[in-house]
Length: 259
Ligand code: ADP
Ligand code: MG
Image (cartoon, rainbow, N blue to C red):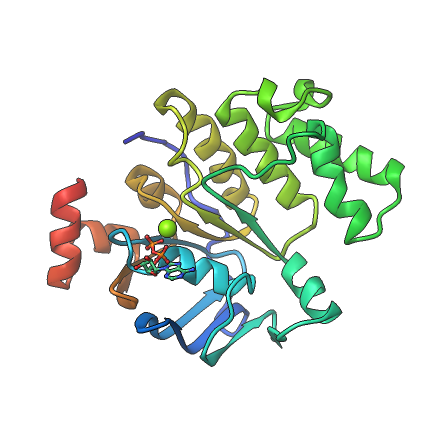
């Protein structure tokens, strides 16, 4: 586990009422498996929420429902006051408001780093090419891979590729960024270079939902920790409170295994 020593988003979560993502009594099944059970979760603008829990507890499914890669069976999800529609152009636009970074970087192998970061801008946002390139270069600089712009993904290290994936998501000007175990596939020496970029994003005020096993990151960057098990949110607390004084037996058991 890596340690990162940085300060939290100085602003902290925005004032109550400024709710960016609201899940209200969300339920989802995969066949007989009730993978999300009565999920209520509200994320304020500028808030950083770290989601932890055992494998199979529904963390990835939760992320995937927020940008509608998965449908839900009941309940509702709203992003910035707008309900997530079922389909169509409205869905494409709302989905673009939600940036997602996966464990596997999912870059286009036959496009350069620069093209990867330009593509969504020109195709979805209809940005003109020159403006898209300028923005892509600025974002690649921001995540520390500006000199790699003309290479192909396979020529980069895993940590560099994941930073490109973050830049690509940011290029869409998302309102919220979802990270699903973004460092789990990385060699240990590359984990911090990705966490550092995420820390900086958090400090810059980005609203973030981060599924991670990096407890150092959770302690230093999260405004709130959400603990899931068996498709339910078992416990939510500010990180110090959660790590020092977990209330539920499930959380105590989980922490005793990973810390
Ligand atoms: P986590 O990310 O916490 O490990 P997931 O959300 O990936 O959990 O999975 C939760 C449960 O749902 C697991 O039991 C998993 O096997 C199951 N699951 C995930 N995706 C699918 C799917 N597309 N079809 C059927 N079952 C799935
Ligand atoms: Mg997962």
